Amino acid sequence: MLNHRRDLMYGDIRLFSGTSCEPLSQKIADYIGIPLCGRKIIEFANENLFIQLAGSVRGQDCYVIQSTSRPVHRNLMEMLILIQTLRLDSAARITAVLPYMCYARSDKKDQPRVPITARLVADMIEVAGADRYIIVDLHAGQIQGFFNIPGDALTAYHRMISNLIELKKDMFDPVVLSTDLGFAKRARNIAEKLHVPLAFIEKRRLKNDSKAEALTVIGDVQNHDVILVDDEIDTGGSMVNAINLAKKLGARDIYVNFVHPVFSANAAERLAEAPAKLYITTDTIEIPEKSRNLLGDRLMILSISELLGEVIHRANAGISVGMMFNE
Image 1 (cartoon, rainbow, N blue to C red):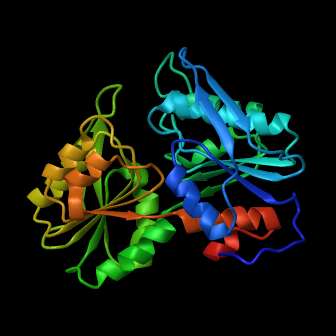
Image 2: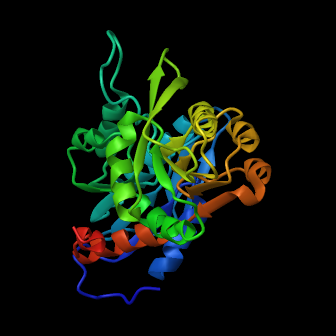
Image 3: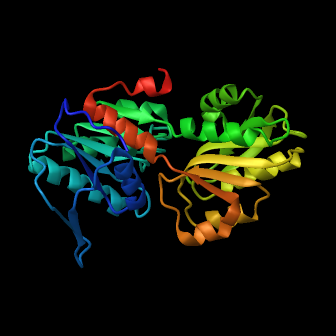
C-alpha cells in the first residue's frame, strides 16, 4: 500500500473498473490503497449498455481500467461510455487505462482499400472524453502517434525480465529467440538485460488473417535453452510453429514469454500440445479457467498490478514515470 501525498494536482484518485479485467483492477486498487468506485453497468435485451456512477466524481482524477479483449466491441463500448459518463459528471481529469488495446495490428495501410483501425480507436477514446491514456505493450510503437492526448506507453517486460533473471539460474546456456523480425528490437533489449545471445525467427504472413509461416532461425539455438519472446499469443499458430522449429533445430527446454494472453479459438489446446517447458504471461487479459487448466503447471501468470498502480499514483502526484525505469 502506498503512502498518499496530499499535494495532489488533479484531486483524489478515483478508480473505475470495466467488466473485462475486474481482478486486475482490484489488485491495482489494493496496491494504491483505495477502493474501486461503484458503478452500475447494465446490458439491455437489445445489447445496448447503460452505465450509472454510484457517486459524484466532480473535480476528481479518474482512471478507467478496461482491457478491450474479447468480446472486443462490448468491452470497447463499455469503456467509451464509462469515460463519457465521467466527463458529463465533471471529472477534473480522465485517464483511459488499457492493459490491452484492441485493433493494435491495424496500424497502417499496407494494402489498397484498407482502414487504419487503431487510429480510429484512439480517436474514439479522445472523443469520449479521455484526457490521458496508459497502455501496456502496444503491438507497434507508432500507435502512440495516433493519440492527440498525452499518455504513458508501458511494457510489462520490466516485470518479466526480473522473473527471467531468476529462472535463468536453472537454464542451460540460454538464448533469447524473437518470434519475428518485427519484435527484434525489443528482443535485443531483453537479451541485453539477461546478458545472453539473441536469435530471430524469419516468418511470412501469407493472407489477411492471423496465420504466419515460420521459415528459418537466424542465429544458433542448438543445445541451448531458449527464451522465446513475443508481445501476444492470439490463435497460437505462430507460437507453436516457432516452438516446433526451435525444437527441430536442436533447442533444449523452451520458455515462452508473452505479455497478452489473447487466446483466440483453440489457442490453449495448441499450446498444451506443444513441447514447451513453461508459458510465462501476465494478467493484462483474464485467462478463462478452461485454458488455465489445459496448461496447468506449465502456465505462470505475472501480475502487472504494481506497475499500473505505481504509474497511476505518479501521474496523480505529478512524479516522473520514466524514473521508475531509470529513463
